[in-house]
Length: 161
Image (cartoon, rainbow, N blue to C red; front, side, top):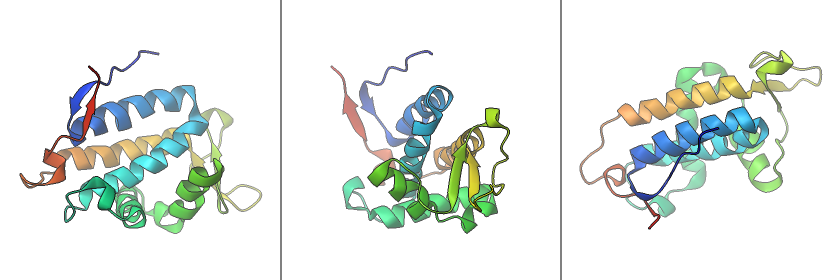
């Protein structure tokens, strides 16, 4: 696995490409379980990108941001609307590293189908498909134009030297 070097100043769109797409992509292949956590956090970040009325990243309500990010997923596949991803995935992983009610997690190698229902009545999320849909959401944000004074056009990260 090639290491992605993250250093220097980074704009939000660069962060989306290098961290949310490239790094989480590598993690999805190497550590599928952990990638569910990172994708959930990434969904919230994408929602924050789209909430343009606030200039400070830390002043944006996390629930509002996550819900805005989920809207992107629903645009990719309307079946996401039936899942309570905030409570089941984001909150479950943020507090216990374990999904809550309603969903079950899997990988393609186990032969499960994304959005199928398992024997316990839980909806299965297959990490590779979930990541693929997440990348589509990332690209939607990358393609969007933001006002010159929007936080999306200001330095996001300052790392390194």
